[in-house]
Length: 349
Image (cartoon, rainbow, N blue to C red; front, top):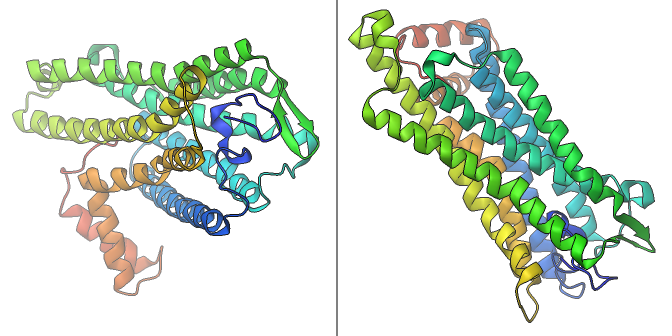
């Protein structure tokens, strides 16, 4: 992207503080419209992720928390970090006309943190696909333990931090702006690196995992549970739960690929292609579109997982009947309704 005080293209992850992303200062209507869209995305994302955390906590009380549930908790954490570290700051910068108002110290911290939040979010989604790959394609190797999942998530956050450290080193506070000071060659290298690390590589790994899963499922070798339990009915329920979990994880991946693609493609084109004219509004739309995944994922989780959808509907029914959250009546109502559907719940992604 271009910085308003420099002719160099700056990193694509922080469009909000540049003249390319923010509408013209004279166009107050466009600015207000962008701010409203940001607020809507922030509210929807917050409500969706809070609901997702609530459902995950209720399920973990009734049964031991699985590695899949643990990964989903980290998905929510990464999505909330994207919301909190990006949208409030972006709204503030848009409101003041893309002047840097956070001082020289935060110039080297805020934008790298924004990039870190996106990177961790993408790679935790990739871990979800790997977890399903291990469970379906390599069942004899055993599922990932909760301790192993926590270690892998810690590595993801550390890796995302290491990637953005050089980016922070090239940021400098000059006048009323936070600009990047790298040369053209370094800038192009970082553009390619961020594209590979935050989009191409995780998407390739995820696609590989699900292609292998699809091949194994098609051949009918999805698990060895039947030989262990000796029950065709148990095998059928297990396959149904696997299908539900895989469907939810695949939808997460599709949302990630679709929502991130316009943003990534535009910045590669700006860096290496030929363009003319004012494309600020196109970039604004592409950037905001990346945030839609943070409220689409909780929606997909609730709607595409039958057991979660049933529990969500039960909770809504209790609230409509006037029961206070956490009351004795609610617990009895949920227990009674859940017992009628025992044995039909699906595992989470």
